Length: 331
Image 1: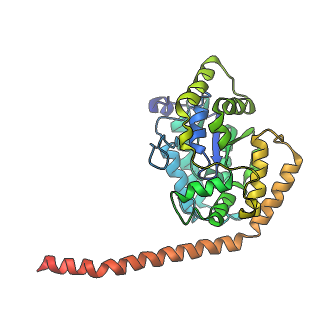
Image 2: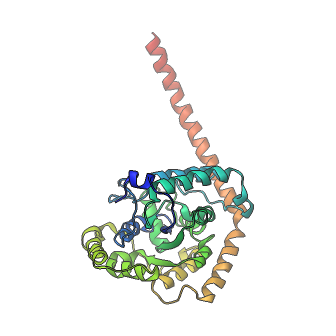
Image 3: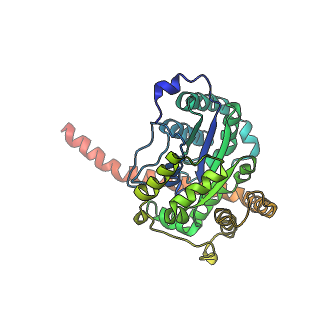
């Protein structure tokens, strides 16, 4: 495991980083714990589990905080609820320099001593051009592991935590703006797509798939850890919602349906990552999503306005009572 003194003493950061990305409620936490079995260092400052993820999030707290700060700098909610798309020229904003310095320093401190390390942080996929610049500046070899889950199952899972965000139409839009805009950047690097249902049903097989795609050695120690992950960590009872690639097509946003079918095909090894039809159609999906950018921005505005008015309403509701209590105390 990571040791702060070891990382602090690192002279550089040249190495291999494996980044777990995917839409919310898609099994990224379970998958991140899984890649740890492949000998990938996650650090020793991980966000603990909650009722949302009882077994842990497996997110480095420092990188998580920096990524949320970057979301806020772009005017995005740290929860992942924002829908607006980031325009191309925004990636040249001056304020990114400060964030770049903070993130590179954190990576050098936390992981500079490790030749093979990884992380996941909610929303990294949303800000992937920034992170790609970070990795390039640090001279890192980069691989990605993409968690894929049927959008219907994502919405059902999300609804247990937030009824409004779990509405299928809203959940599909959140899924799209997280997954679609920068998935094409995977073409630059080794990557593997892992289906959540398959990971839960056959964890050892899926981790070996990832190791093969990323050219990671399957030593006897790694095999032992893979088996331990499948036998001791995976708990099928935590898998409450399943989906099928062709299920409920009439209820899905057509773009989410099309994008997920490609991810599912990759996760099932039905197509190769270099399949030209995949990337041609993904460009079409991305273009159609960006054609919605003004509407997506307006939805954010309306949601912010509703939240603001609700907050004002609560303040007005409790203000008279607070005043009465203050007056009574003064008496």
